[in-house]
Length: 157
Image (cartoon, rainbow, N blue to C red; front, side, top):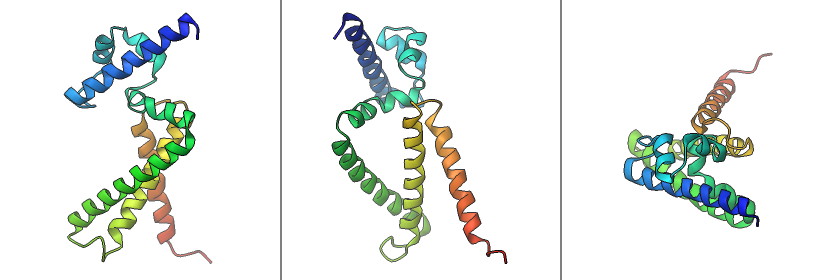
């Protein structure tokens, strides 16, 4: 590994470490890119050489892990998604005042949200983390709404 690559790796690691510390201290939304850059002892322009958005820092290790060991990544992702889907179904069931075991709506809605987020997340990763993940999720949710609206319409004859 060249000196330049080692320096780039250290800088990237410093940015990720600083960002994660600040996210824990102040929350994701309470942290600015300028604060991350200052904590990492780099300028904001250097931050953007390594990451296109603040969201990209959150998933920096996920991208590296996915590239190193796709099988482990797939297993961990599956387990995480299952836990999250159960949590979402419980939340929806509580809001509706129903049992997630007896009423299919909480699980259907949780699955719809999970699938929509998964699609947005993978499109965002595949694009090189360009733009904000939130915008991708909003586009995916709009597509889900359009699809459900289309399915409700009677077929034209």
